[in-house]
Image (cartoon, rainbow, N blue to C red):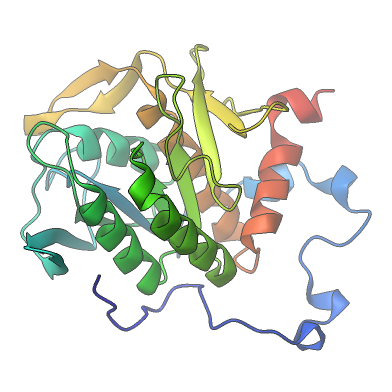
Amino acid sequence: MTSPPAGAGRATALTWNLLDRRPADIPIAAGAADRITPAWAYGGADGAGVRVCLVDSGVEPGHPMIGELASNHAVVLRGEQAAVVPVAAEDVCGHGTACAGIVRRLAPRCELHSVRILGEHGSGSGQALLAGLGWAIDQGFDVINLSLSTSRPQFNQGLRELADLAYFRRSVIVASAHNARIESFPWRFSSVVSVGSHAEDDSGLVLYNPVPPVEFFARGQAVPVAGLNGTTTRNTGNSFAAPHVTGLSALILAKHPDLTTFELKTVLYLTAANVRGA
């Protein structure tokens, strides 16, 4: 796995001294839960200043629903070695373009980056997933969208270590749950924001799930998405629920850039429709 120098995102070196962060500096103070509303969390935000990376199949350049991409990379496997290299913008199967369009629709001014790990039929290797995710974390992206997972247990530990590293560095991983009721990763890790889909026709509706391991539900049924060759289509699955939460996370971080991943999850929970309406 390659380890390029960290980028200029919010992620910083670990701080072990609690005194380095005074109570007055904590964005969500104790007792403030009743004041955390959607208006406070993301009202008026457009994602400006937030760096989002899609680890997927690439993104089609110039798509009218997506616009400009800040960077395009791909994982290249050479035997047992994996390298992440700059490439021309391209989507080999359409999955990444669909996810990117959802993020862009919700957070139009976020900075979108792409690292391609999937092939023409939407398949990929655990080795490529580890390399692509590790690279994205090293770059310090604010939010990393993973609309994919692996069920192969040999990659479990490596993914867990990367998910924890991202959590500690304040790179938020938003990961889609598997569409089938099987155990796969990294969405099952508590250090990521895990997302399944609801069937409501409302792209702004996010629901909290009180029964683990999936934490949140977002729109994932017949979702209007960007298709290849500049088209628009509709797709269904948890893959398309996750970028709704990625886009929402980008809005929240645009207004509150100092939130930790734990604090961001708290805001997502407190602003979920079935929590704030309770």
